[in-house]
Length: 208
Image (cartoon, rainbow, N blue to C red; front, top):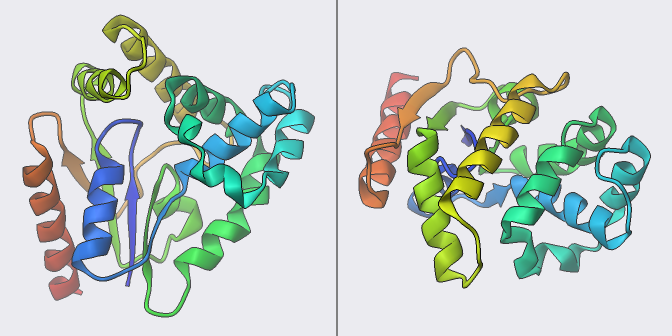
């Protein structure tokens, strides 16, 4: 069983995907980390994330970079959004994601184009959304807990900019697959959101 969990930054898709993987005993891949690694590598290379050549060169990042805590920073998140607009970068990372999705037994993947591009044949597709204020508040709490200095207004502005880039890019824009189930977590706590997602998967499996 392949479960695709898509949605914008800080919507709760990562938390939901991890919980679904644990509940259904499936491997999980946060595909956003791959793009964050490319963005961070571009910065480490002193390259320009808006330049296709520099962004593609950063796709050769070492696997050890995936464990770097800097990947979770807001700055790296913005870099990831910028490198992800390049079709060359998306093609370079496509096979890596596709191989994970199609492994025997299935998998859970979360990102922005899992249900539309990476695994359009997924048995269950969720599109997780939340309002910008709700998402900004969540990310603000995360950054405070991590000891990072950032304001709520800065986070909200960054989320809006990322959303605009992700939705308007020419290749694999952020959009719900036609057969995806919409899950709005704006007013849901962590456990309620997870329970709702599990319920959606169970219902889809039974209906299929």
